[in-house]
Amino acid sequence: MTSAFASVPGIAAIPGLVHGFERRAPGVPAERREAARLRVTAARSRQGRVFFLTQVHGAAVARAPWDGAPEADASFATGPGVLLAIETADCLPVLFVDPVRRAVAAAHAGWRGTASGVAAAALRALVDSGSRLEDVRAALGPAIGACCYEVGEEVRSALGPDLAHCFRLADGGRGRPHLDLRAANRAQLEAAGLAPPAISDLDECTRCRADLYHSWRRDGPAAGRMIHVVGFAR
Ligand SMILES: [Zn+2]
Image (cartoon, rainbow, N blue to C red; front, top):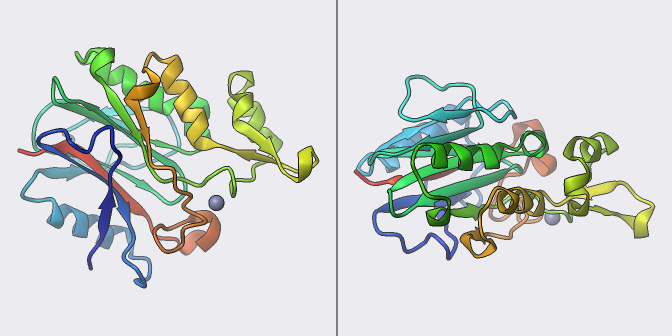
C-alpha cells in the first residue's frame, strides 16, 4: 500500500528532518492498527526506528527511545534515528522541531488532551531537555475542524475560560458549541512562549476530507488511523 505525507512550510526545509502528516491511500479501506504500524516502520527503516505510544488522551510525555508502547500522548527525542509516531483519526497531531539541537517532540491532542495541555507539555519537555524556546518550531497537522466538531457543554467547561474564544455556536448562537481544536492548541503554544510565526498549520478538516483522511466522527469505531512521524534521520 502506498501512502502520502503532507508537510507544512515552517519545517519542510530542515536538513535531515524526517517528518510528515500521513494521508490515506485513495480507495483503500482502513487497515488494522498493527498492519499500519508495520507498514510505516518498514517504510522508514532506513531513516530510523519508529516509536509508537499507547495513547490514552492524557498529558504524559515519554522520552524516546523506549521498549514496548508506553501510555502517554506526547514524546520527545534528542538523538538521530529516533522517529516519533502519533496516531490520529480526528484529534490534532502536533510535531515540534528544534533544528539547532536536532531534537524533536510530538503530541496527540483531542479535547481531553487539550484540556490537560498536552502540546504545551511536549514543548516544555523539549525545553527542559536543553532546547531554547526561540529555536523550536511547531507544526499543527490535519484534525477535525470547527466546521464538524460539535461538542457538549462539558467540553467547554473542561477547556475553561482561557480557551472560550475557541468555541463557536451553531445556528446563530442557539446551537451546540463547535470546538476549534487547532485554535485552542495554537493559543496554548503561544501562551507557553512560542512566537506565532514559529507555528505552522495544515488547515484541513479530517471529517470533511474523506479523500485524504480517516475520521472517527465520520467513519465510526472502524475508522483507520493516520500515522504521523517526526525525527532526524540516522
Ligand atoms: Zn469539517
